[in-house]
Amino acid sequence: MPQYDQDKTFNALAIRDTALKTSTPSEHKQFSPKTIAVCNKLDQLVTFQLQGSFEETFTEVFNIGATFDVAANTNGWQNASVYFPYLRLTAQCTTAPTTGTLTVLFLKVE
Image (tube, rainbow, N blue to C red):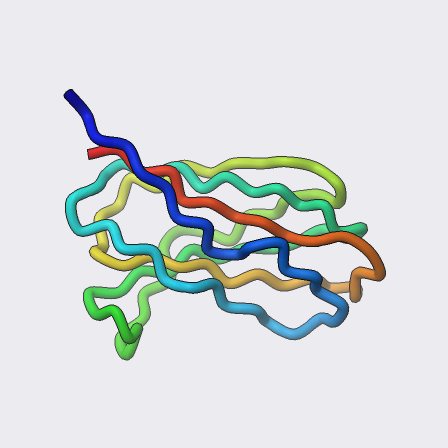
């Protein structure tokens, strides 16, 4: 029977600038594939980059695939079938949001 798990890597983050934000790492040692679920309640579009590492400290970082956008006040998702034991996201807005929060979950299956 498959095992399921999830990590909340951005937890209701209130972004109010255009600085690059980095999520907390998500461990995927025994899990693959993954779905990234995004709840963008910000009033601006957010651009994401998936990153992987073989170290929990992310000393060595690998950008995985192309960036993807999630429009303001929408939910979105992206699949990630590549394997790295640790994954995280970067998030950035080109215009500073004035309201809302950002929540992202890694949905995992063994």
